[in-house]
Length: 136
Image 1 (cartoon, rainbow, N blue to C red):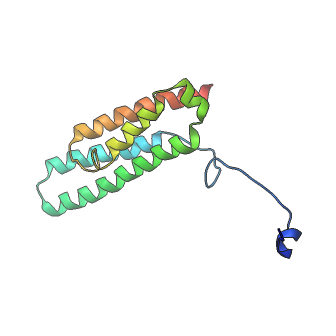
Image 2 (cartoon, rainbow, N blue to C red):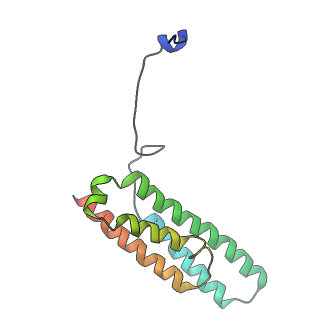
Image 3 (tube, rainbow, N blue to C red):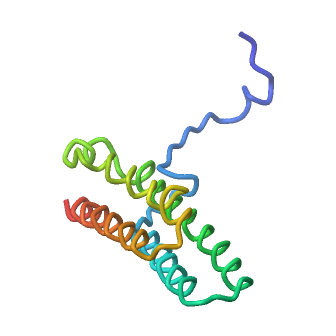
């Protein structure tokens, strides 16, 4: 097959990276901070009857819940590798449960602080595994 001239003249370089910008900085604390915010918003929502405040709180809580999911997905898809999943077979289920707790059926769809506490507990379980893998 014929290659265009510019492709033949350019050096062929291949690169690989674990993420869009290979910074190498991963930490479940990012998800935890957002989940702490979700819990605090739920508590403030429950304590306030002002409809405008409650509407704003729900919007922000949903945004923070989405950020929790994004941070967990980055860990799941970019940081954790097949050897981690082999050593910790519960990891797939754990991340799935945590992202669901951050989703529509969890903290994104609920203003109950107990749901946010469940999410924080799952993040703590993921963090425990994360830090074990960092020490290995």
